Image 1 (cartoon, rainbow, N blue to C red):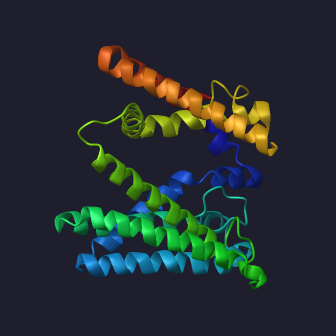
Image 2 (cartoon, one colour; image 1 turned 135 degrees about the vertical axis):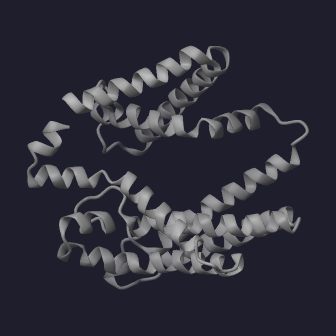
Length: 276
């Protein structure tokens, strides 16, 4: 804490602002909440959110180009010019697109049209995926040529994949609700413990105050070839799934000790942050 705020240099400030996933989440949620607070019909809100999702994709390249001319605190939030990990553009698009699809799904459930809606989602998402793949192969102005980082097609393609997966998994759940298999039970468990998985994988992957050097990034680096990267990803997934199963068992069988462990770890990390 003291080193962060009382020994600050411009380079350290830029590094601090680069790790901006929480800022991105907070601003995205507040923006979606502000849009949802408008006294509009659900259909109008869904159209507005979809329009905003499209606009984010289109505006990301010019906003990134304007990044060098913005103040550090603003440029690091909205663009990747300062090597920000999660700039608002394009990542706010996931929150907007997710909210739009959620509104449409809610309306379909209320109208008892859930199954047709899920089928429609899978078809449309597949068409969007194909269209974005085709658009990526077309020559575009230099500003829109960076497919893997700032292009609209990459954003919309990923949103299409996400809603397609949501629709497919929900249809799968509806189809075997009476007799779920072990894989569905495992997926349900991972969903219940998603916050644990989010925090835990960051500690394993990037480290923390107590495993600063013993983490995957420090030990393996960040420039692996394809098959080593596949192996590292598979190992991370296996470790996280095993720890999630163990944590869920501890919460069910030993809830008091699990609660103590949770608050003990949180207290330790808070103290280390404040006094280091």
